Length: 396
Image 1: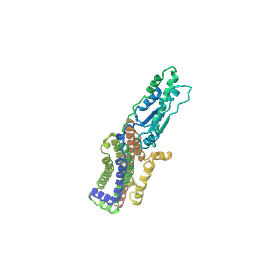
Image 2 (image 1 turned 60 degrees about the horizontal axis):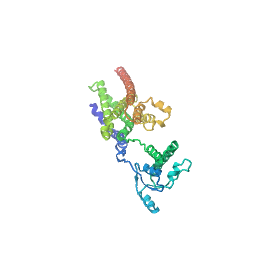
Image 3 (image 1 turned 135 degrees about the horizontal axis):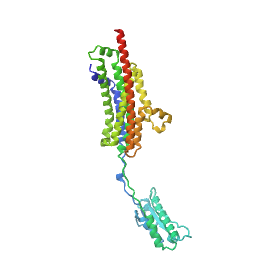
Image 4 (image 1 turned 45 degrees about the vertical axis):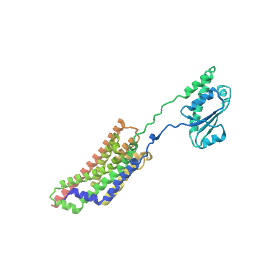
C-alpha cells in the first residue's frame, strides 16, 4: 500500500475543512496588509493663511505686527467696507481680517496703560484664527517683555527685538513611517496560530485514526512491509502534508507583501511561525497517540484545544484585556510565546538587537515545547508497540 497516496486521499476526504482553515490567513492578510490606507505624506504641503489688515494706527508697533503676520502667510488688500469683508470671508477668499485700532502702539508701549484690543473677523470652519491669534499673542508678549526690560529703548528697537524673538523658527521634518504593509504585517501572523493548530490536528488525527482501523491494521499485519517501515513512511507522509499546509498558510502573506517579507522583520516572523509549526505538528502527534481509537474525543480535542490555547494567549482577545491569573496560565502554552513575539514587533518602532534576542528566546521556548510533545508521543508509541508485542506473543 502506498502510504503517501493514502495520506493524500484522507486529506482530500476532508478537503472542505482544509480549505476553510487555509482561507482564514488569506482573508486576514488581505484585510490587514493588502488594503492598508496610504499615509498621504506625499500630498502634504505647507499652507499659508490668507489675511487682510486694516491699520488705523500707522505706528512702528502696528507695522511690526503686520510684518510678523506676513512671515509665512499671504496678505491681501480688501476694500474697507462691511460687504466686501463679509463676501471675502464667506467665499473663503480670505480667512482672517485684522483691524488695528488707532493708538494701539502707544497703549502697548505704555506700562501703565490698558492693554490694547484688536478687532478681527474670521472665516467659518478654519484653523486660521488659531494660527494667527497665537502669532499675535507671541508678538505682543515679546513687545511687553522688552518694554519692561529696557524702559529707555526706542520703540523701533523694541519692535525689532520682538520681531527677532517672535520669528525664531524650528525645523519640522515629516518622515513617512515604515511601510504600512510592514506595520500591519504581524497581524495576519497572529491568526496563523489558530489555523496551524487546527490543520495539524485535522491532518494528523484523521490520518492516524484511519490507519489504526481494524481492517487497515490487519492488512498491514500481513503485508510484506515491516511495521516499523510503515510507521516511518506514515510519519514522513504526515509531516510532508503538514509542512505543505504551513507553506500554503504563509504564501498569501508573502504574495501580498512582496519584498517586505524579505526584510529582517519579515524573516523573523517567518522563523517564529516555523517554530510554532513544529509545535503544532508535535501536538498533533501527541493527540493522536493519546486518543488513538476514539474519533469522537479526537474531533472534540481538535475543536476545543486550539480555541482554548488561542483565547488564553491573546490571539483572539488583546492580552491587556485578559486577567493576570489567566496570563500566568497561558505562559505554560506555546501559543503565548508565539503571540508574545508578534506583540513585541507590533509595539517596536524599528528592528533592534533586543527585539531579535526576544524572538530567539521565544523561538527556543517554542522548540522546547515541541521537543517535549514529540518525546511524550514517542514514549506513548513505544509503550503501545511494547504492549502489542506482548499481546501478539501471548496469542501465538
